[in-house]
Length: 158
Length: 89
Image (cartoon, rainbow over all chains, first blue to last red):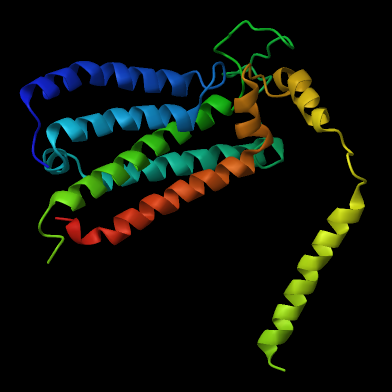
């Protein structure tokens, strides 16, 4: 698919940063507000899909290497399993929330049934949210990009 | 009788055993449907430190479920890249 008109490209240039910021906000505040790694990653990946629609998949495919996005996806998966194994090593149980109650980072414990939001809570949950967010952004972007490129190119048909 | 039939019979009997045990392990309506909800609402902020109960269930209490979802996404990306591998330059 070729590029769309200049109006569409300009509007998508304006909208794209806000979509990415909203997606990263949903990822980062996953332990305080509704949402989390999967949902915020889907929002950010839909912002990347907006670029594919506006600029054409061949334009994006020439500038971004699929192998690098695949590397990001593997980094997210390894980070998620790594946090789980840190729970096994430090806490004794797989998926143990080893950071809660500690003084290092994300260690505070809120009052039961309180609604005051403190970002520095929830132990290992924000780390897992970040890992899953990176994984979902890269994974969905790879799927959309490769399928959009394969549906419009000629070299796939021979 | 082939060895395949014997293996299938053993597997089916193990599966039937699971169903029978789960059918007679607890009487109907025990535990109550709200018991788990009340436990999570009252204990999630003390045990996991998270204000969002849904995130604490997804990433802490049911961590293996999220691991399975992540594996599914990884398998999907691997499959797409493998199917369209001739597009690589």
